[in-house]
Image (cartoon, rainbow, N blue to C red; front, side, top):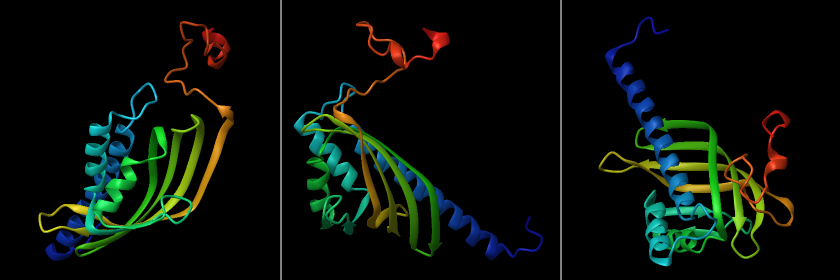
Length: 191
């Protein structure tokens, strides 16, 4: 509860809250574009659409952005062109990104954040299903138009866990499939 706040401090706090919300929306857009590169039947989008989505995903970053994925996750890249190329040659044929537990601090036109990533993915080459987790340490910069963009993304604590040995079909529902598969996923009272 605020008991005595000057209009200036209130305005600064409101501006910081708006910045944090803009960064959360930026993160949601980035994750959505990353996932839109794949179809519901676990295929990569056609090449032209893949390139378009990779460029839109890279547009979530400043022109001079740094991607610090290290050897575990995409190497180290600088700039939108390198990011778009990396996003376009993604190793997946399906992915769902979940970013949560954000810790965001704002100072003027600069911000920093830490997120926890939980990702489910299918490798394009083997169709192996993986669970991926990581912590991302990020920096953001407000652009002249007022929008926030990633200026640095560092992947830490990257872990990949195969869901099963060999290929594993992901299911989009717990309901049994027409061929009878999936029935074993239903709770007893729904069979």
